[in-house]
Image 1 (cartoon, protein in one colour):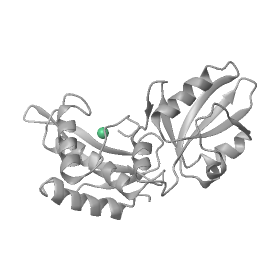
Image 2 (cartoon, protein in one colour):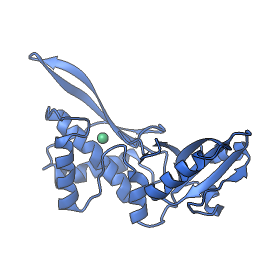
Image 3 (tube, helix red, strand yellow):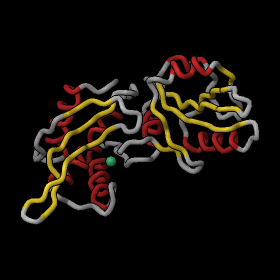
Amino acid sequence: MRATVEFVERKFDEFNRLCFGGRLEPLPVKLSDAKTFMGKVEYKWRTVGGRREKYDFVMRVNTRVDLPEDELEDIILHEMIHYYLGVNRLEDTAPHGKLFLSLMNQINERYGRHITVSRKYSVAQTAQTVGARPRLHIVAVVAMADGRVGVKVIPRVEERILNYYNGMLSWEQVKAIELFLTSDPFFNSFPNSGALKAYIVDKRDIDAHLTDSMRLECDGRTVRVPRD
Ligand SMILES: [Zn+2]
């Protein structure tokens, strides 16, 4: 499913009562089509009594990728933890520092959630645990040195994605690889495996079917879903 403002507000209310003792004030919810994050809490800074504090919080939730409902809920919960720390002026050791992780682990354990921190391979991993419901594909777009473009659907397992990514890049004929997360049914027909090959396609077809995708970041050691 894709987030709606109504859905996010309803879940916010539910999780607020369940996990935060109902102490969070409702905040404006906005939907986003960005390719760079799944959810985000934005705020401004002001100085009150010589102390800097965050205010004017807004929660943005991405609607680009069709996700299982529980995955979307975990994204909302992730952002609610940022919000909770922000309004309570709890300075963390890092964007997902000790405070964030401790609260996240608490909620995961107590309520059987699967909230994760940013920049881990979380969307696909979680999708994998709930089965193939919306078929989320990891798609590698392979730019060949001769100008042709290949495509490969890879299993949603970080290790196999990295194996493919590094294996293919070690070939001289391969110039670059981009990774995408998409639920576009166009990719259902491609064999899903870690085999080190790519199917040559018309670049325009691929572009058309990746308009709805989210780009993954890969440095050869980790695959990351920009989450914020
Ligand atoms: Zn975060």
